[in-house]
Image 1: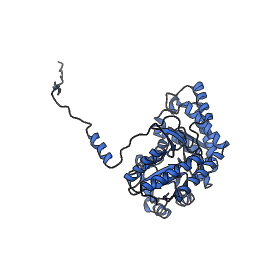
Image 2: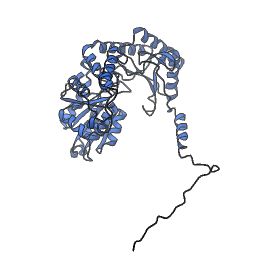
Image 3: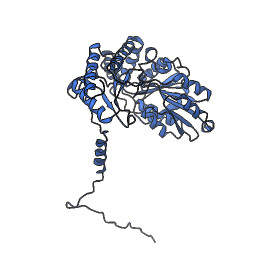
Image 4: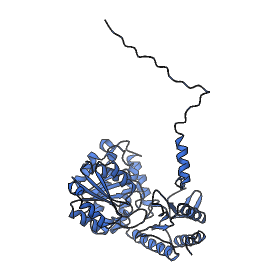
Length: 416
């Protein structure tokens, strides 16, 4: 005898035209209103044409002091030609992740070139600088017995990577070596399976440089390995733009050198350079690498051409620094506070969200684009305009920008 089970029929709740459907996403309007009230709502500026030292943004021609196009390579003929040639040879994309069939010989060529550039055994390219930081933190700090130690002003990608790691996390006060020593000397550190110190090479909001020699000395003393995020130092600091480890002559001591391909190189992507063992391990364990499609051949070829230019034309970097010094000195002479900047990233401190945004808006009206940076990107009371000059800015561009900064600064009572 067979026993048949019949599922009970549950009437579906149906809405007719007269019933009001619940607005399940209505909270978004409330959140947006809150963001606007706090001055944190973002509207996008639209770049019309190539990223240039003088660009057309929202239909207006402005001196562009907000781009990361440090070496003026974003519209370089040689990079564009390399991208076009790669499309003709390889097509527009790989349609696969690297571990399956998304690795082309051109990807390996770029990685060999980056390793030689950084002076390491090997390198591995990721889809972005953000993902390479997440991948390294998550993959290397994979146990609760590990300890990840991070500067308090490290980039958001390091913060998120640390959150995804299983390790315990300790934050040291910005560039405070005594505080870092205290953490390394703690019982928690002594009991850790692994210890990794993570720092930006150049800090993206203030433009100051990590005290890498002191960090490495402490790391060696307490048997910790070091990861340096050199996003804003790639193509900017060190011989031929090799970064802060090379700048301090420490490239052979830093275990993980993180670089970007989206700022001075003017394309997209990030990479980690280090030992062959490090790269082999990440290929097998790094989730952003495993589960993201590989770079289009055109982007990869662009990056190869850019690294070649870094080696062939160091004068681009020299001009970048000359422009940065000139602009920084001009701002200081006008009475502006440029904080602790040591690099082409030069903040103009304001200290108030509304005034920083008004300052940026008025400069734009006058023909200068300098973005306001406010909470939560920086702490309350540290609101500023962040400026970045490039090697492509002319003295005329910089003088024009300085004139407008002084004019609007006086209007807003920021300078006398």
